[in-house]
Image (cartoon, rainbow, N blue to C red):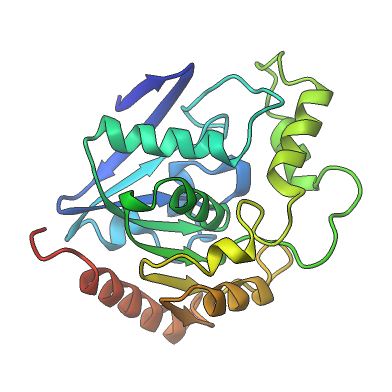
Length: 245
């Protein structure tokens, strides 16, 4: 099975197709695993959509209920996931790639860009998560639902989970970076808008305006809009793929 270990984490991944690499991050919040790409909640499945022309890489995120696992600590944050993503690229000997992420994948993308912009050729953020307004009291329901699946993590005590949740979600906006940082991102980006509480349209729209080199698709999930969005994303990726690839 394709997997590797780094700094106490065991990371499982799969590859589809050949060509210039696209590293993908599936939706479903902290339960982001490869299998979600084939579900209706992911209107664009990159593992089938682009495998004819690209090397598409998908991964189970750590402790997401799939085959990737790591200890949980009160210091865990977006940087913990980014360390996994960079370790995966290093493991596969990939210096630079496109990024495609839906839902929590948007924050994974932005944090990776913050840490290692030299590894990113372009980025597509589909219905990125974010928060408009203050954080509600207590842990989010989806976080608690994810935590219910941690029966084999005795180290994940309530204080540890509280700290982890704050590290992820207390900052607001898109959680991992602030608006000032987003305005400095120079690589080509595309944002496909969200339209619900977890993926607020105003967050997508603001991201598209703050990113200096960004294309925005306000409707994309069904019917003719989905067909058109798939064509635009494919054209975007082709336009920004290095000629030598």
